[in-house]
Structures are given as C-alpha cells and as structure tokens.
Amino acid sequence: MMQPVDAAGRRRLLQLAWQGTGAAIALAALPGLAVAGPRPRLGRDPFTLGVASGDPDAQGAVLWTRLAPEPLLGGGMPSRAVPVRWFVAEDPGMRRVVQRGVAAAVPELAHSVHVEVMGLQPGRDYFYRFSCDGDEESPIGHFRTTPLPDARLDRLQLALCSCQAWNSGYYPVLADIARSDVDLVLHAGDYLYEYSPLQNARGVVLDAQRFSGETTSLQRYRDQYALYKLDPDLQAAHAAHAFAVIWDDHEVQNDYSGITPEKEGGSLETFIARRAAAYRAFYEHLPVRRAPTTNGGLRIHRQLRYGDLAQLTLLDCRQFRPANPCGVGETPRCAAALDPRASMLGVGQEAWFEQAMASAAGLRWNVVVQQLLMAQLKLDAGTPRERFWNDAWDGYPLARCRMLEALHKSGQGNGIVLGGDWHSSFVNDLKLDFDVAGDAVVATEFVAPAISSGGDDTPYGPYYGPSMPMNPHIRYFDGDRRGWWRMEFARDTLQAELRFADSVLRPDAVVAAAAGFQVERGRPGARRTL
View 1 (cartoon, rainbow, N blue to C red):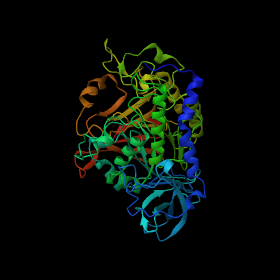
View 2 (cartoon, rainbow, N blue to C red):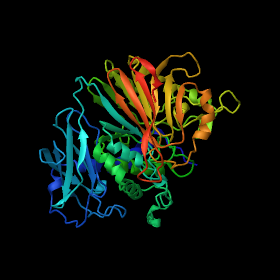
View 3 (tube, helix red, strand yellow):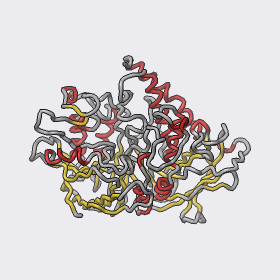
View 4 (spheres, rainbow, N blue to C red):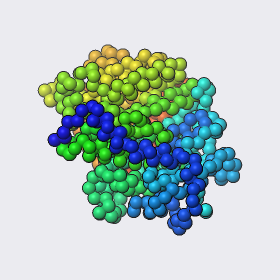
C-alpha cells in the first residue's frame, strides 16, 4: 500500500521531480547557447520524427522538431547542444522567407526544439522547415495563424480526434485529417499509450529488451514517443496542420488521478517521478509552449481565440484532481462523489475556468475541449445494479454541474463541449440535472472515436449499447468504429461530420462520412443531418 504523505511533503516531491525539466526548458531558451561551439557532423538524417506546429495565435505558433538519427536507440545524438536553424515562409516552396533564426537542441530535452514564433500576420498561411548539419533539411510544415481577437470571422474548421494506440493498428484516420482543409487539429488525449508495443497489429518486430513491459522511465517514454512519431500518417497530419494537444491518462498510466496511480502498491515518490518523466517526454515531443507550473507539473490548460467567432478553452482533467471519490472502475454512486469539495480540475483550474467562461461573453461560440465523457451515462439504470464509470465526469457530478453552470452563464446557448477517451462516438445533450426529463439543455457535447485504439474490434458497442435507451440525453452513440469529427463553425451554425475508417489494419483504408449533425447557435442540442 502507498504510504501517506502530508500536503507539504507532496509539494516538495512534485517540485523536486520537476526541477530537472524546468531547468532544461529554461536552458533551451538561452539565446547564446545555440551557436556555441562547432557544428557536429551527424552523417545521417536527423529529422526522422518529422516536424509539427501548435497553439497558433495571431502572431505565430510553436514550431517543433526533434533531432533523432537513431530514433529507436535513444536518438543517436551527441551529448551536447546542437544548433538548429529554422525558417518561416509565405509560400510552400520556402522562397519568400519572412523569419529565420537559430534554436538550441539540448540533450536535456532529447534534442527537441520548440520555437515560439512571433511577429507574423494574423489569419495567414505560413510554411516552415528546419536545417541542421549544414545541408540536412527537414520536411516542410504548414500552419495558419489565428485572426486578431476582435476581427470578424465567418468560418472556423476544426478536426477533433483522440486515442491512437500504435500497437492497435495504422492511422488512416490521420491520413484523412492530413488531406482535409482545417484550421486546427484538436487532439483530446491518449496521444501515447504506456503499454508494451511488442505485440502489435502492424507486424513490426521491435527490440524486446527496449520495449518490454510498461513504460515508466524517461528513456522509455522517449523511445515510445519516437516509435509513434515514426508513423508517416502521423507525421503528415502534423506537417499539414497546427495541433492543440492535451493529455489524458495513457500518456502517464491508465486511469491515474493527480498523484494517485491506477493501482495500489509502490511508493508515492516512485509514481511522482514516473509522472514527471512522462510530462517531460510529452513536452519534448509535442508543439506546446514553455509553461511549467509552480507545483511540479506542466500547464496544459489554456485558451485559443479565433476572432469574434470562437473561444477554445482546453482543460486538464488529470494533473490536479484527487483520487476518484468512488474508486476505480464502474460502481454505484457513493456519498463521497456528492461532496462539494470533490473536483476533477482542482480548485485553481476551476477558478481559472470560471474566468475563461466570463471572457467568452459576446463571442458566437464557446468551445470547451477536454478529455472525457461529460454527459451522464447510467449503466443498468433503474435496477439494483445501476452503476457509473468513475474515471469520467460521472465520478465528479457536482464538479460537472459547476462547470456546466459556468458555461451556461457565459451566455447565449452557444456552448460546445468536445472530448475523447471512450473509443466511441457520442452526441449528447448536456443538462444541469440529467435525471429530470424536462431540464433545459445548456450545451451540446461531441465525443471523438479512437484514431486506432481497439483496432477493428467492437468492445464498446455491445457493452454500452443496451444502456442508451435509459440515457435519453445521449442522442447518438457508436462504439464500434474508428474515426474523427470534422467541425465547421459558421456565424449561426455548427456542422459536425463524423468520419469513420473501414479498417485500421490497413494504412490505405477508406475513410468516409458516416453521420452529420447541426447545432444552431442559441438553441443547444444537435439535429441529425446525415
């Protein structure tokens, strides 16, 4: 059993675990470091993991790459800082370069590079690449800056996806996203899975010693990310569009909560060190901004603004929450879940969320992006076996009510909640009280299916399907197929298209529209159109 530690002790452990990462992030930002010393001759392609951009604003975006000539052998880089040149251009041929610079790829961050570009024009398409070792050049990537916050915007196109277990299959879903014209890709978590990838649907033979067992160490998290990012369709999606990524549980460990692991056993120190390693590797491999928190973690809750059309509020449903009040798995609702102190987001993030909702007043759409199913889902409702899944918002019903009240107060019936995690597709009416049939709908929820997790199996449709009639606020459910949501926000309507792959056991599988829904601004609730 894990030994109890007081609050002050927990804070010290968290700060100590994150110290090295915070120092490494600060080190990589030092302007003189990148040009110190002679350039090493790598002799191999250092850009095996591709390029990525993320978190765009009206002046720029984060540009990412990682130097890794031997990606599955620790990277294969020398243990010193390496200068990497970056370029931003107005054209895909990189002839009209508008910005350039040099960044440091430091060994403390696995020779990853995060360039936070500023000074670009709002609402424009830009292209970028990196170079290293004299003549080695990266692939060319693309991103689109956001409009100015007060600019009128008539259309916003988003992709929503989550759950991409590499060992479950290929990524035709990401190939379809790469080919689509969207302004931003929202990845709602489970970008990585911590499980061993040795047994995989791709038939790839991996180093048994390097990839055996569950991922727990920094080096193994780095190897696991490298394995995922070698996929050509994942690289293509990142090169085609800017991403905004949040984590869920598998980036660390299945169903963990804050500093509480899924299962009892081991020490608190061991799990906090593991979580810090996982957060560090997340930063090293994704285009996120430098924003370490003061409590020993990485801040991923943030906002993106698209003119006067939409505010996107991204949440962290893992890092700050206490242990699930009713335990793990499916159980009847316990008294602890109804304690008003129970919080999915933590006190600080809840207060920040309320302020974020207030700031959305006057915008056409208020979009909340988080990891989990927000709607209530009763299993075996009305029977002695009635249960709830505790790892979702059903485990924190009063915290959910506070969130929905803040979203509802912000306005004009324009709340949209986006999520993932369930390897299933949902369209839900969100209410303050799901058990009152006539209670008003305050927002509309769309939950993304998995990109690949679960493979071509159908584990959730038969399991959850029988409970759907007992949850009338769930307007659509599919637990059998892999895919993504394509969402187009206009001034007064949201058009949501659900696209499914016919298989994830082939990289060239067909992905096509399977269902469509429309939400009218000011009238929460989705109407099916396809």
